[in-house]
Amino acid sequence: MSEPPVKRDSLALPSLITGVLGFFGVTAVLGMVFGVVTLVRTRRTGERGRGLAIGGIVASVAWMVAIPVASILLLSVALKASNTPILSMRPDDCYNAARPGIDAVKVPCAAEHDGVVLDSFTMAGPQVPYPGDRKVHDTALSVCTDRLKNALGESGVSPAEPVIVGYGPDETAWAAGIRVAVCGFESRQGPWRG
Image (tube, rainbow, N blue to C red; front, side, top):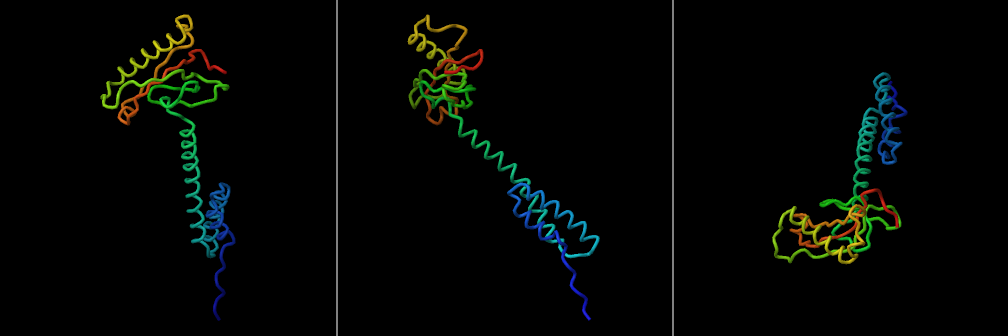
């Protein structure tokens, strides 16, 4: 007489299934738990199912790594999509946290914001070599200050609040052919609204 076949552990197949369906999050945890329990029980009882349990654990671990990585990547893409290079903004665009070389977050002017673009100008022709960070910054700020003082009149510009700013292209943007500088007002004493 032949011996009856060794039966499979009852959690082996659920471990594999929940591990493979781990993209739902909770199922990855279940796949891991079922797999570990199956491995412990099969070692003790001699039942089949080790391969299914290991497959469930591997799939669960893969999803437990993939879900946070994918979430971080999606979040960074979403944040990048909400940012607008300060040099591509137009007059009357409002923004937050603009600094040279760093994108600004374009926001509705009705919401709180740090600054507003008032003007822009072309700094140089296409064949002009990059003059250096300091020269670009100084030129952008000087021209912006002159333009805005002329537009608003001397009495329209307070020396303390708001502050006139000028943003020019960095070396990478210059090499890409961007020669536009942006002028604006920024608050130094908290966000504006409206």
